[in-house]
Amino acid sequence: GGDELGRGVESGAQVEDRVALVREAARRWGATVAITGARDVLSDGERVLGVDNGHRWLTTVTGTGCMASAAVAAFCAVEPDPLIAAAAGLAALGLAAERAAETAQGPASFKVALLDAVYHLGPDDLRAGARVRELGN
Image (cartoon, rainbow, N blue to C red; front, side, top):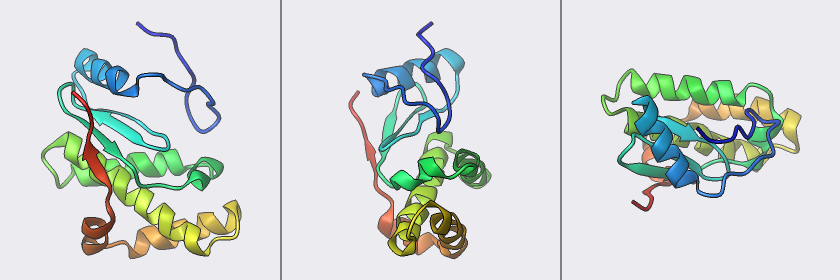
């Protein structure tokens, strides 16, 4: 029912009220919905979470959106609450991106470092480094 603003890393469009949009989309579709960005915003139609992990270089590497989807799917396989699973998957990829950026010198070296960081990320890392918070009702 709203205006389409674009998709993928090539999209420069910004949504004014991402909390309302993600909640309404989740209600309408009966699904957990995420809008990724500097802060990822997720909702199951009732609850809304924000994930503040990540790095700007994620937008410079083709395939990181697919990596995010794969991370969410992996967490959905073991966590029965789809909202928590989606937030954990996005936080994991975001945390790996933050770690990769510490040693990368640009997007090319970031891509390789990101794959290594995902490989080395463990449950204790995620517990200590995930920045997930509830957002306004």
